[in-house]
Length: 321
Ligand SMILES: Nc1ncnc2c1ncn2[C@@H]1O[C@H](COP(=O)(O)OP(=O)(O)OP(=O)(O)O)[C@@H](O)[C@H]1O
Ligand code: SF4
Ligand SMILES: [Mg+2]
Image (cartoon, rainbow, N blue to C red):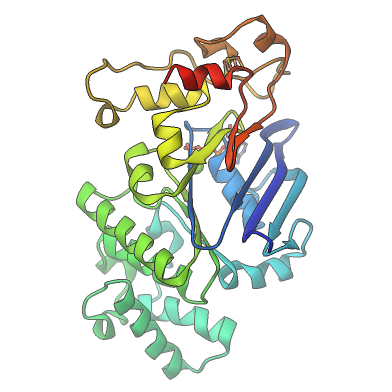
């Protein structure tokens, strides 16, 4: 059977600059894959491409995206519109900018049912109230008639989750869904996402800066650096025995994951992708770098089932965990 989502060698360019450089990964039904990596590494552009929503000025420059075995690259906008919401949906970091301030919350959720399912007003309203209750909005029947600004940040994010789940999609993409929320609300929203994901056997892509969030919420992790996935594996594998020096650096910079050793920061910054790149994109910052690294760009290679690393010296890095 085909995986729920299969991304193969995806490339996205802004002008002549390739910001997503050959990204490949899969998501199976019922699993959560976290995508982590520093700002600008290409997480959001990758996620948007999966919904046929490359940002203005960007272009899909190559690769394949398959949803339940169906090739979706090259679909017309009209076909994408059917896929979005019905098979894949997305939750953004900032729910306020995704909601219309001049329409009630109930109207906006109901719109999903009216537009995609052809339901009448009353029926759509009933379904919206059910969904709001399902995502933990108290007193849902009454709150349907309120406008988004009356909702707290956490409650707005619940509204977004309700809208994302309305049409029973198979894959949910959550791009930094909790960074705008305070810590206790973050935990509640993650718990809700995890609960719905398990109940519906959804595939989920969770994009996050926060390695603590990822450790709790994901099954597998994909680490992005400079437009490429440099490591994949299960959460315990990648946390305990990273196979790429960049991941190793990320783990060492997180206080809660480390007990005794002092914190280490990764010095320097990512390469400028608008300039030609020879060799490994991490070489300038890498404590393991050798001459070969500056000459040959390491392709991601399998290290075991579901485990990949784009490092010439992956085995050595694992041994140094
Ligand atoms: N509208 C745009 N025009 C030009 N370049 C862009 C645009 N949007 C993104 N980029 C570039 O694409 C690259 C990837 O951006 P992306 O937003 O995917 O990063 P990210 O990993 O999501 O970062 P963050 O963690 O900050 O959200 C960056 O180098 C960015 O400069
Ligand atoms: S290939 Fe070389 S420079 Fe790149 S991450 Fe591995 S050791 Fe470091
Ligand atoms: Mg982003």
